[in-house]
Structure formats: structure tokens, C-alpha cells
Image (cartoon, rainbow, N blue to C red):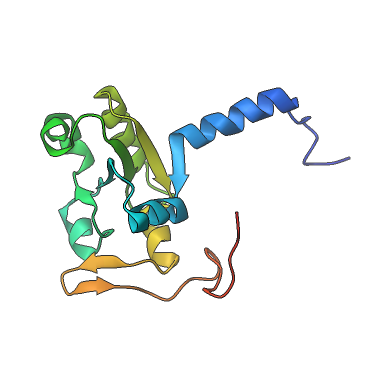
Length: 152
């Protein structure tokens, strides 16, 4: 007996609705990087971590707005009508989810970046630190080598 299908798969229409809903709430590091690289208008990427984490490194162009401060500061820090993507440390942290919830409550269209800062760094993407822009080598467990693409 299959362990995978011990519980039968959903019918295709239900599955399509489920996967579409997931994509409405979250995005990945590669897609955020692509949008930032081409300068997609009306996109604000929000780092919801605290001051020490921000100082350790953050995405280029990100806005630092710790989760606890969003309700009080978002409407003055983030223009109405822009699309927001939130991130925190990584997949083991709910900070980006809490931040996205706060933005949604304030009426912003928002998505959470899966993988957070951890996967951004592990995929070899640039970060801003006190010494300037830097990059780490790609971790092949999280992203393909530069000469190989996942094409997903």
C-alpha cells in the first residue's frame, strides 16, 4: 500500500484551488530577487526582524520595519496601494507571517517570502552589511549552481 496515497489525493479542481491559494499568500526568494532586479514598480520588501538582525545583513532595497512596529508605523513608512513582501530569518520563524498579517489588517496587498533571509543568503544572493554589499557562495542544497537552473 502506498504511504503517499494512504489518504487519497484531492480531486483536481480542489487541488487547483488549494495550490492557487498558496501562491496568493507566499512567494519565493528567486521570484523576489527577479522582481527587485528588474525594478518592478510599487513593490516594497519589508524586513520584519529586529535591529541586531538587520545590522547583520539585509536584502538590498529592503525597508526595515520590525513586526512589533508595523501597526504603528506602516502607514507612514509604506505608501498606500503598494504591494508588500515580508521576510524574517528563515523558514523556522513566523515573524514574516506575523508581519504579513499586520500589513493585511492595514489593507495592503501582501505576500510572505518563503525561506526568509536564510534562503536569500544560501542562494548566494547579495546582502547589505555594515561593510557594504556582499555575497556568500551558493549552497547547493538550496539552489542550483550558477551554471545550472531549476527552471521552475
